[in-house]
Image (cartoon, rainbow, N blue to C red; front, side):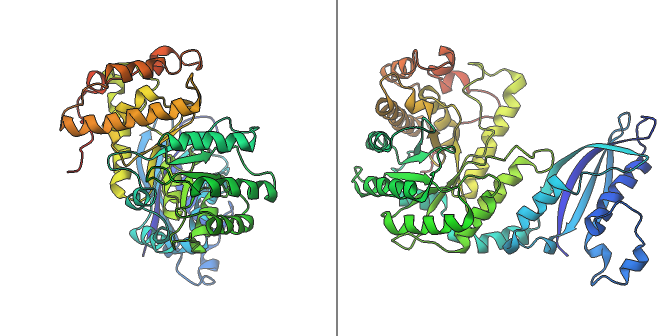
Length: 466
């Protein structure tokens, strides 16, 4: 029997406000278990229903009360187990499970007890769940090595992507000109931001034509691609992404955001087995918009895993190591969380499935440190780091490419030690790039030296493969 195991925290108080006892906690956990079966908060005649079920009740749901977290506040933990076969991956299992956790199962009253503050701490799926998703969706997706090969990414270099800014309101000829400049500087992908969606089919046809012209160019042995945003209703999505794959020279890069319909949209593309002109699936980039929105009921990393197992290829996992807003030297209070963030990214890379990205306000002066920590198999998605360069997007892209190339060379030379600083000329370029263009402080925009700031316990540089 395979079970989906859900670890849940909650608080329970008596009618007079006193903290609930372990017996009260047991009553709450039992009610959640029963509600997963019967969908009602009244007392069910289980003998009546047992005779009318096509399987034993104990093969559908069960629970185990854990240790008390805080008896003075009536805070307890329990493990709820739901039969995995009730959530088949090919019929929207993730959407079904996340929907009931966030919208139904953990929202009830149980007089005279007062129940509150439900938090889902973890969801553990059986191995067969992951295997089934891989067969259905990830087999028709693109792994990190395949992404590097398809886009002809130079050995040692990260994937460089520009999230086009401003988000809305620009002329399409400006989009094409800036995209050409950024790709000519050495970037691999220009991606239309989350907010930039086509307003009609004709608009999308114009964007496809621009993407086709860009893809037809020679980019010094690289593949330069404009990634359109296909966060659309599923029937429209499938038609339009099929047309995109037929019109754009391989490889094809397309964006589908992880919003309300994100999991189903990505799965639909993989289920349809859509391919490009060389018979390869499109590379799907994804920003998980709702990763944190339901965090009390669905842990953010489980939303991320759902998108990856559904077929996302390049994805922002959130929780990147915070170089941009931390002190120039890490104190002991933040070292542990910083090391954990680094390890989380390294674990995602180790899986060799979807390529994780760093994004969200990163600038040229921070890129050397990110390379030292995470290496070349992590994508860099820059917006303001390109657009806000005082000499314009082309100069911003050129600076980021120069930093990436220098960081790769220094990492090769450094072995197991933190690498030497960038050249003084490159450090100066980083420090002067955004003067007068960003609201961030100069200390957050200037060069961040890995050897001076990252030499902390339990943290070592990314190990270069020989």
